[in-house]
Image 1 (cartoon, rainbow, N blue to C red):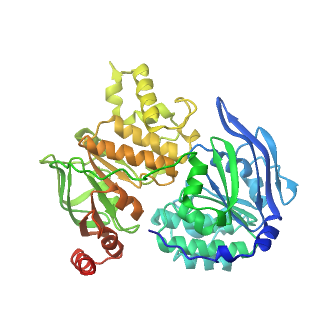
Image 2 (image 1 turned 135 degrees about the vertical axis):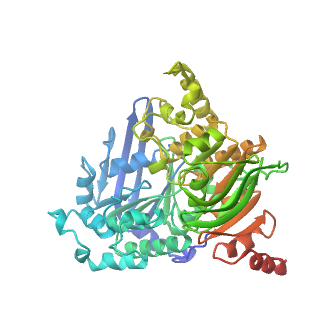
Image 3 (image 1 turned 45 degrees about the horizontal axis):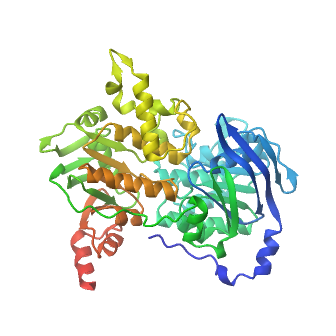
Length: 526
């Protein structure tokens, strides 16, 4: 479980000092409402954000968080209400005008230009350069160089060569390089390692000292309890309430967010596992080598490890999206040749990827079209799509996954990130896979939806589907997986059953200790 530094002992913070700070409002939201067609995204939302505080915004997917952020940042207009920033009414028609007023947003979905360097991306975002050719690493301000150095990022590196976590840090650095008075962070740690998260929190502490106001959006309640001063909760487009973080615990926030007791987050582990359905022998590819493992019917097999350990590369190779250098893949005892993803799909392998925006959704297509892309052959008759069948299948999956949509004819980009993820998951469930690979399946998804997805995965396993779960969250790995494999620097170094010693085993394995050493030391402490 992640452990974050405590920036101060909140319980000892003088209450009168806290109240004094909270009286200096940086942002005042008054009766904000927004409707999209038949969906009321926000209704009469009002609350205040103090100057220089970290104000967390919490709510389930579809609660209205993203809509509110887009209104504040000028992406979309509000229907009703008013926004005051530093005592003046905010009137912005686009994000550029918002940035000029010091409002900067770092979205969960990244917007960097892959072929440009880190320095070029940052300089382009500052809007200081009159000519593109003048954008050069030598023009980077010293304070930006210092931030990049903290995150071990070379400003001359092209963004396409960075992992998702490092790209996220470039986005954040780019945002604070501008005249930043209000910084909005939308799921900023979704792709970060523990070390990167701690460094980000230190940076947030520095920004607070400089008087920057921060709106922090996250589904990770442990982070909110660590970094926030206050938290406001939205539910179904309505304002639920605001509380000082010193008055909150996990149960309080969950109850405010979903309106009910969540109960046990994870369903019971599987008890009846079948024969081996997938076997990988000495597989090698880009980013990994000599990987061997097996997966049984009805099993949820976890893959743990740090970002860059080779887990995703291994999965994309099995799925045929990346080339295998050597080794064998056996499905139900037969050799599997997956030169393209379509080969894997036809064989019964489904893959929910880590990067939803880039490789999972079809951004210009609607919800129903995104839902059936893996089964087009099944919903076509005589070369024509069966529209009635498509609607029935899509609506059935929406009900099953409790996906919040206005209409299945809406563009998928109209949905929140978590609901987009549910549409991608429904696509693969419709294909009736034998093996389902899910890579960071709950990244950017609220706690209630996580609970539902965990139950769905366990139900699928109970029906005999073999599931591979790749996750950077140790609680998720421990809570969901029957057996866990750990990778480190492209190699499988540890395999362990889910028992009392698993937490200790994983904690050491993800930093590179070999299987024999990890297990021997764990057994010695039992």
